[in-house]
Image (cartoon, rainbow, N blue to C red):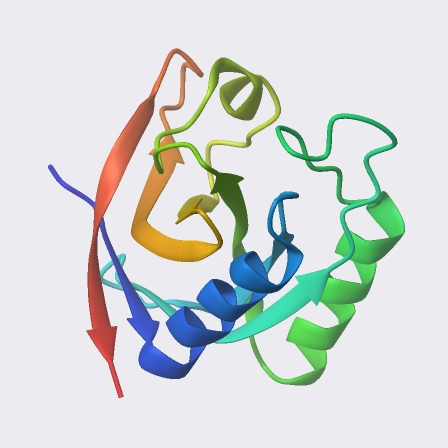
Length: 144
């Protein structure tokens, strides 16, 4: 069964703008929204988070635990949940790396913005399989 994520157009644009603004480094952030009773995931808000990776920021990102805690608090205050993480791949495809898989959690969506030469080229979203062996691509629907 292919999983699906629905993202508001404004959120998509904000993630693309973030990726382009920090190019050639990776951007990162939290996706806030809801999972409904049918399992449909809807992203309604983006929180940009500082990439605090010390080195190799062109290929890696780090979200500090305090930043994730703040994202959880913001989500709860707005009646939402953190439903995923987004980051960019500067001058690389929007496919998850082994590093991405090693640091992911099975219950979140992981959206990757491929930013080629400073412009968004593609956007794909994934969920880590329960056994952590691989990612499964989610279909993305954009809504106003």
